[in-house]
Figure 1 (cartoon, rainbow, N blue to C red):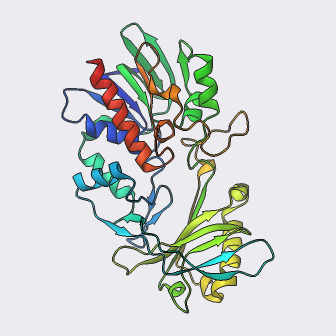
Figure 2 (figure 1 turned 120 degrees about the vertical axis):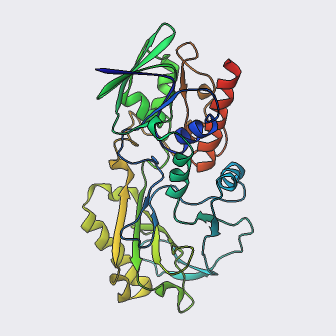
Figure 3 (figure 1 turned 45 degrees about the vertical axis):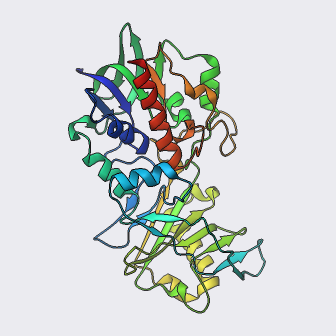
Amino acid sequence: MHIIESDITIIGAGLTGLTIAYLLRDKDIKITILEARERLGGRIYTQTNNNDTPLDLGATWFSNQHTEVLELLKQLKLKTFNQHYSTTAIYEPQPNSKHQIVALPQNNEGSYRLVGGTSHLINTLYQHIKPTEVKHNEIVTSITQENALVSIKTNTSIYKSGLVISTLPPNLFDSTITVHPELPKEAKYIMQNTHTWMGDSIKVGLKYSAPFWRENNLSGTIFSNAGPITEFYDHCNYQNNQYALKGFLKSDYFSITKEERLTLITNQLKKYYGDGVKNFTAYEELVWTKEPFTYANYNNSVFPHTNNGHAIYKTPFLDNKLYIAGTETSASYSGKMEGALRSAQYICKLIEELK
């Protein structure tokens, strides 16, 4: 196998991994980023076809509380815009109950989206690092401590590095990568029982030629306890000339076909908006449970946010050569893009302290 050496190897070219590389870009450090997918971004994915409405099928929203996200967007000169909510929402309190039009309370905090879609952040970060640092289609299978270096084996190569930083969801890391010497049992247990953000989500979107849901005192905001849609939102673009609805489907529907999911969605929307819902120009979805480079089955039942930000992720392993990073490991805003950035900042701080 081909052997490649670097100072730091990062596993995963999502928001945390690319931000670490961005923060260390002016340091005299040779970095390699190993990405299992062909694309960048991890759980950030904006779907576009033929320059039509961009659909964020992964991380989407941020607010004024997410100070590190806003600061990074400012540094990168990326534009944001307000999520459109209108003043009303469609609310379905329970199965077999009549849906209602309810007034939405004024949200002074605000909710924002990124012009061009959230993947614009990923692509911009990539432009600020060395393109040769990212190796695509590299699936890490093992990490072995070898004296002063760590050996990282993938499906194609062996990477030798002074430090290795995993940005994978902890349960995915423990399920798919063998570590020598083995990590402490407590650490493995916590990883196996750390909830994977986005892992049980189904995000779906419908594109239209006109935003009919903004008429007749309606809006694109839907909350339903009946389903299969649980939440839906107006997802038109910043210029307000491309139109879409996007939201969440109950995770129970991961095992049926795409066509079956679409039928369920349009039938539900028809109750609210009428036959016009079937005149969509495109239907897109992402079933995150079926993403093998994001999600691995748990050994036990794991509730949302379980062990996110656990203290065990604050210190490295393998004699300070292996770091576990990512939004699930952040002590604050875990499961958010803000958590991913704060995790990257924390890891870079630890690296600086080791010098």
